[in-house]
Image (cartoon, rainbow, N blue to C red; front, side, top):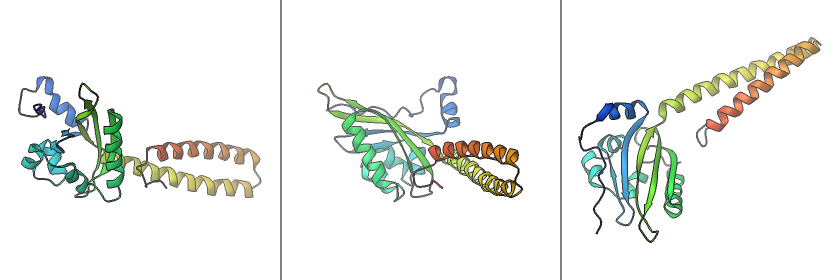
Length: 193
């Protein structure tokens, strides 16, 4: 029986402030999953964020506990993405909301295989995307308001029969359209408007 790899957050030295740099980058924790034993080990901060008891999370819980801590609208998508990643192998990333406090998390990792190619371990990090998502939503709201005003201005310019002004506003509306498209690409699933 293979020995379980360490989470790597056991209080060892922190050369160069690696933990502070990771925290500043949005990393909220690390995880590892023994696929065959169905034991998902979570660092204490990540377990707390998911509403799980940190000690139990560090010892390992069934994957079902992570899914239970996932927002209901994201649960099936997260489970499907994890199963696909295990089947495919290699790296993966999937964003989801938590159930306890509706935080947006990005689960990133890699599936490791044994010498005959069977998936054995998965390990990775979790990023907190909540602030980025909130900022994107605020920006999208601003762009939506710009579009509404541009449409109103375009109507007024057309009523004035000012073709130069109308053409200028048409170009502004195209640029606003590009900005809207940019925000739609970055919008969380189900949050496009």
